[in-house]
Amino acid sequence: MSQSDLSISWQRRVLLKYEQILFRIIALPMALMPAPIAYGLAVLRGDYLFSLDAPTRKARLESLKRAFGDELTPSTINRILRDTFRLRSCERVDVMRLIGDAKRIEGLVSINGLENIQRSLKAGKGVILCSAHFGSYESSISLLSRRGLPITFITGEDWKTAPDHATSPLRRIGRVFLLYTPMVSHHLRRKSIITSDKFSAVKAAGVLQSGELVFTQLDKIVKRNESSRAISVEFLNSERMFLPGAITLAKSSGAPILITLIRRASDWRHQILDISRPISLEGETDVCLRRCVTAIESAVRERPALWRHWDRGLAIWVPNQ
Image: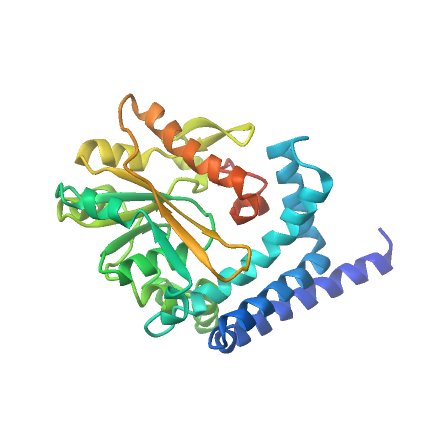
């Protein structure tokens, strides 16, 4: 690589960095704009990043090719790649529109299957909502909480307290804008359960015993120290490792599992949150896990641009951590 190529690469990295900072600054004012304008600008920003951010585009392209092989035409793959950039920008606007009473986004999201949650709660054993890093899931749990459904999010870090645990004032400020902590946690009624907490399973069981909901994601990255508990499942033409915690929790508590996924309409601003009926828990843990993973894989195959793990090279297991 020539010195000129290195210079261009360096310039692009700097440009991308400052573009991201600028977009975080203007994201809130954009969120206050009429929806067609706000999301229209987000789409334009996505197109700009698509043309500029070659490394991310390349990583996503390689992952898509591994997942779909020759199933997709080059033009289809190119459209999906462009849509991944557009969608990430739109998702940022989604979360910023949660400000205040969330009315700026609430009217843009339709919910299918809310009755499945309400019906399942009547049994008094709580409900486990299983999702993935798919679409604007941050907004979806906030909007469900707005409907009077107290949800406890099982995550790697607490959105309510994460900024306070950052190592420096500058990092705390950055995490507020990067993770949208104030916007999302503002509507959540319960403190998150941190997966690294050795009592996390007990806490989650307590939430369910109270007849409430927990929200978790099946496609979390599995670290090396967790690999002994993980189960290998065929996913997007590869064998990937998944943690069966949600299945184990459901079997021990009697709480049903509902798959919860949010997808975006072609106008970029309207969304549909789909909540499934309870997933069958018949069979061994690995069989039930595969059943849930299959439901998520079907959604990813139908709308691949909505899945956020393409950047990670399809990694659901990071062996070096």
